[in-house]
Length: 77
Image 1 (cartoon, rainbow, N blue to C red):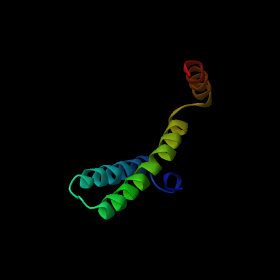
Image 2: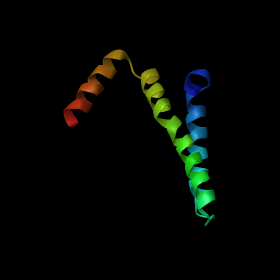
Image 3: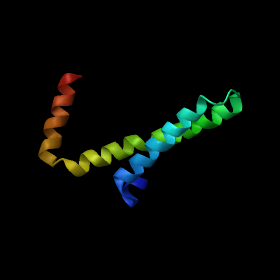
Image 4: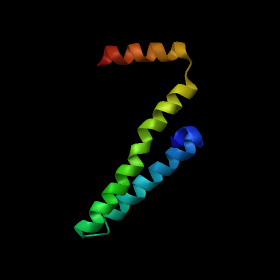
């Protein structure tokens, strides 16, 4: 996984940049082929964000804080 091998914030920043750039470029093209390719690139960029967020949460919270947050999250839902 990229988030384990490289710096998590770097991977998250690059995936946000790739997804944002592909989304921005979709406004410039009117062809379906370019739109499909850019949509796939947007999905690849956005796919890394969930794994990076999970890694950041695990890195920055202790196990006791994680338990409290999970309980609070379950109570809200």
